[in-house]
Image 1 (cartoon, rainbow, N blue to C red):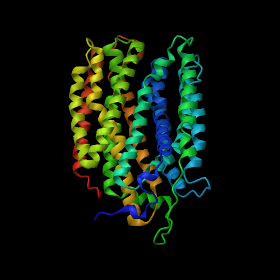
Image 2 (cartoon, rainbow, N blue to C red; image 1 turned 30 degrees about the vertical axis):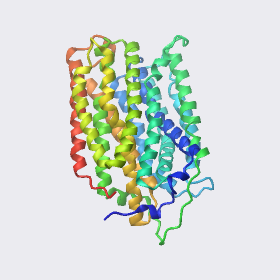
Image 3 (cartoon, rainbow, N blue to C red; image 1 turned 90 degrees about the vertical axis):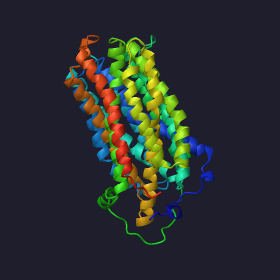
Length: 455
């Protein structure tokens, strides 16, 4: 049975969402990108490739704080759903957490370079815990605002498309962050990492991250047509996790964000150690170029994804995107070519759309299911849906990092060897990149066959 959730949600038509609110939401998602990914883009080239910290230990230090913070996500969503502040349910959390996240992010890069490896690792771990705990209070309420701006499925896809443009713009900047630390105006990479780290934290996460709290007016909540007893966090979680379509969506997220991202993480290593014989500077530039190509083509594909999701339906659009991704996985074997390094930019043509789909179609589907859930139960729990989706993505991303760190050790990678990595190590990286991309795209296609969504 299909439910029309529009009748019991607080949002008005798309025309009621003014330009200022849309831009504030988009900028909020720009900040969320760096809250989610900012540590990774600097920690790997700095803590691992520069300070030579063991890749597996660093992967643990990067992922454990994410997992700990994600465990708090459902609780954050629950208290956000039920907050009765005069400033709104979401906005107080967004404003405060944006600045706490910004300051803790800047402190991560203040580690003294003459400390021992263990001391540097402990320092990184402690500050990462603080940053991730603060950022979960930013991520969940901001995402909830995007769910609540409209209840119409087609309009919601447009909103998710808008936020994706800002996410792609953030990713355009993303991989140029570390090359920026190596500019001649900084006396050393240690000085550069501190200036860039603080700038990234204070401006991109703090200042921009607080904008949704200032400029988005939360919708008033209409009274429910029937009295519904408030459920505990445990009851809410159990109810949501028994929803089969949501579980299938989460499995697709795990396959893409953990599996495919694990495979994709080897592109950086192949660029540096296979295409450029260990030259980190040249490799970082090409990686930045690849990221830029992904960002541009991801933004362009977002237009097509939003259009076809409304024309064909979200599920059918996802199917063709995963087919395209599998083809792109095969192509990776040929375009990672030391004779023509910049050929790698073609990777974005086939593999960029899937990441836009993960930020347009999947969140729109999750929001649709939250509406259907409310129509069935009378409970408003967007925060629980957002937190669980974020929890799945964070655990999946953490799994990708841990798997990559463990795999690097198992295949014999050693950053101290520089350009002299073994041929077996390089071959293993290439196989993981190609076969992993193809395999997980095919698994997602199989999962889609079992997805029975009601709208």
